[in-house]
Image 1 (cartoon, helix red, strand yellow):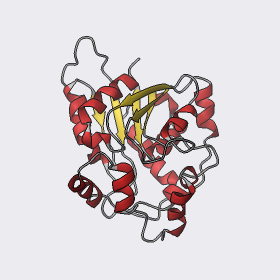
Image 2: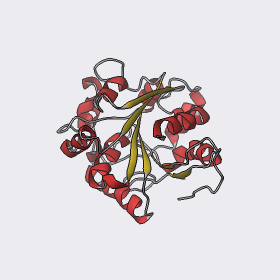
Image 3: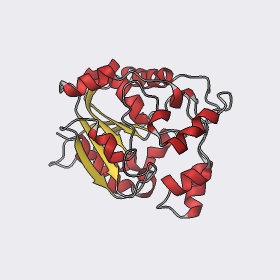
Image 4: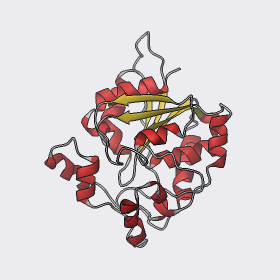
Length: 255
């Protein structure tokens, strides 16, 4: 998509970011962060994955979402990419990196799932939440209820802002949450040092409760060399703290 030709600050490494949105949203969710990164001289792409956005097909598999991301990277001839995945996009960037690791400079997981190989995304939620996925109608797709989004993911927003954010969301394929994922190759690439990773954790993010299912636990799965950073905000820090998040993503992606 759009890139910037702004000359970066002399002391700053110019990076190529591909920012991948989470469930129910589109690439537009990154607009403010992308603007800040471009202002600082970085190249930024914000694709919308298949199965997301108004009128998107809902009969897709998780592999279809991955394929749309891999195709985007290839069609735009991107290389040395800092590939950022928010929330469930952690599973998409992991599978995309398996298929085309040579394009990746670093994977950055932002409040993001690092799925255990053999699990589905639904398996990674606390049991009381994962029951929602079993009840979803594949023909209608899945959209989490406002009450859950508001209290767990928009906990740092005024009510009106949370309502606006949720109103812009659209259902996604249920299979994105229920397909079992073989991530053997992904974890082998990390273990061998072929893939470098960072994990960014907004300090007020309680979309998943601290403890067994918390975000810090996800970071530990990426091995002892994962670069872990904290940033202000909650689950949608790209909305509430875009400047601070942009700065943290630069720290996460640079050498």
